[in-house]
Image (cartoon, rainbow, N blue to C red; front, side):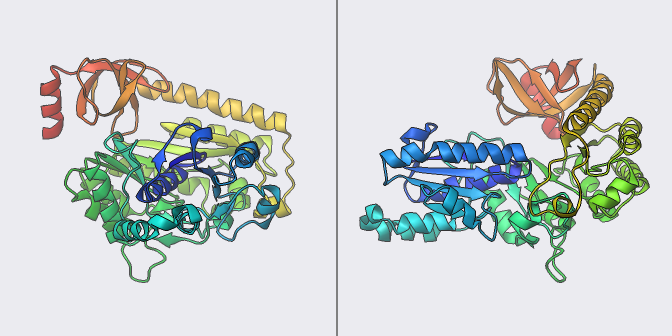
Length: 450
């Protein structure tokens, strides 16, 4: 029996798909990269932007001939397209789909498969295997001892309700996972070869806020920092209102937590921020970036920008460009505003910035950011950086610095999963290239000692 999972969207969806693959393999299924060969096909969907939703609809429709050819094949639709409350329209649109699964919830598919007549003779064995391993993340076989980095959800859902965001409606209210469950999952990943984890939450800094007198993000980081074999920890995405001094002090103090912060601004003008219900001002954000750089002088900072939000004038947009030029972020994830059904902005705000104007503004943001990051990365020329080697890419080793800079280098040895010191010889806007500092063994020894 074989399964195939198609995943689109954010890192949370990637982690959810790994969880589904784990549960399917407990049931005796094996991964196949070919959709037509699969007995079980899972589509893990994203609807943050219209283009992502259109892509998911198209792929779901394309599976109808496969279901017709083999009615015993199981097709499941998962993720934000389904949402936590379900979507009755999907059943009418896709009668060939057997199971509709909320985000982060493999249970409906597992229950469907356990109830299928074709599995009845192995039912007792499968249920026993499932019960024994429930709660452990056993990576799908094609990823075991192959992944150096992995994503670990720590907060599901969101209760903040920014006016443009569909996530609260589709993923539900904020729910923090217990510290013990997270630690057990991280230990499981480390045992399978993972060296670095990225903790995920829509507002990851709010970890534990839904638990009266519960642990907070600094507490979780301290627990994970003590796990043997884990070498690096990252977390995303942050919100300007919840990045406390205690959290920054903890990042600075813990050796395994990387100097890498992702904290979106979304717009560079107070009127647009108020319309987005972000609940901070441009000056608040400036002060936050200053605090981050005081606690973590060499940190890499990433931000998000939405251009063309309803009511955004040319003056508003110029404020965004001016702020980016002033703060000089290492990364800027930018996107054109896309109205999403069910959000406040879609209900009460006119999408009044023409598409061609949105595209012009997006291009200007990307052009400015390329100039900024080129200037930042050129400062790495001639310096030595620690790189965690992730994999081979077109004959070169690929890895990232603690500040999340992408680095390529050549070496004939198998260095996957090693932390190596690299002398930077070339730096561009999106990546850098270099060579191992000294011999490989010396480089690794120096890195571990550091």
